[in-house]
Image (tube, rainbow over all chains, first blue to last red; front, side, top):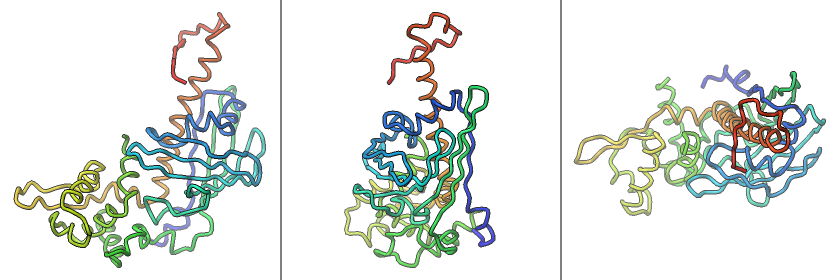
Length: 170
Length: 126
């Protein structure tokens, strides 16, 4: 994890073409029942707590993990241009919707701004999603130090060792 | 449970994260691992099973103390948020794909006889 990686390592992009018209894909992104069907990794049960797809609105949801634990997450919508573009900030949250660190890693950015573009291509829809962390210090992006955030109970200072250990495993 | 979910679940627990951080210092026995925690050996062993199941650690064959060893690969994956985020989205997009497929075939199936295009996949799931 060299610091020089940070500029490019900082942006996430993913593109996928779906075999459905844009209107249908748009609905899948903006309706409660649909989001519960697909949002989240396989095996997790997503439940919508609140959904208001409009600028300033939120999508607050829980994810029931296969081992029984429950995680909460939230989208804060910044821009909705039907049916072509959605901009939202994605975070983990608690039950009341306050933004928290990822439950599995202190290294995960707290807030990721995502821009999704819906391209219509002869009856199919190509989704282009770009994500970039916001409100993050440069150190935070590259350092492993907080990876195991709750670690201070008993093992403070071992992050560095973990970091160098992992560095040797490249 | 798929790989992503099991890594997620394994790392979600602070004790397991602490165990991993300890193992980054080198392999060690269950007894030694249990020391800093106010926890019984069976409880620690349970955590180790989860970590082992997620591929985050391996246990030695040595019957006497079966040392635990950190496995770096899945941890590195989890450490790089982009890789992890990508997997998260890819997993979601797989489900979106399947969902849209179900929608399309449900819409095509009921009252349109001409929709018999060979892909009349009757999917009873919601």
